[in-house]
Length: 244
Image (cartoon, rainbow, N blue to C red):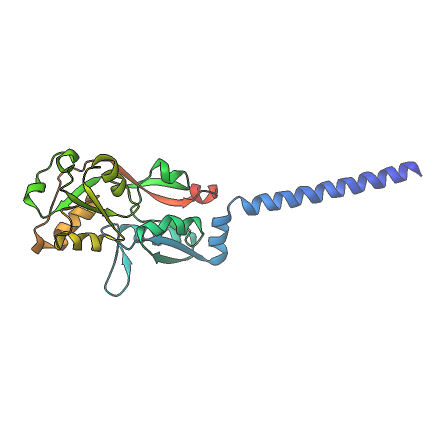
């Protein structure tokens, strides 16, 4: 009788152990890639971008978002066999949207930095850029160093919460810094004389020279810095990071 009771108890313990192991395994599997699971269940990849940073991303008059990064996003969605939805917002809103789960990843000319890497993961770089200067003033056109414009009399404009803003604050601290939500506003400040120069990634400056031929803009031949641009992903999904 005692042997029968012992066998029953052992059988129950074994059954419970197997059930717990299966439950634990299921939980671990479902939580190891929460964002990738969400993307697949939704059948849609949601990518955040500014939509105003040519040539990487820009918005046409009919509302289509085009450029190198939207093309990359479409390729990624296609390789997953799902749809793509691009959400445009101000540059400084992108990382908060990623942290809040409003977008699955960010493709918007975002430089890989240690500070950003504390909150998000990066894959790349897929593009290399650098800080440059866009101006219509002949006195600033030939600058060779940031120190040449490090003066209280110089008004510089940069994109809010960008590495360009940090560059001005850390390297050109004496200049008066103005920030905008997008590059169209920043270029408008140059045209209206509200700012002397725009500090931005070289592609933005180079494209602006061609977009506004009547303004006689000029930019640097060689950027001041090295800027590796990467795909920004949530920090809690290693499988999505590996996939990207």
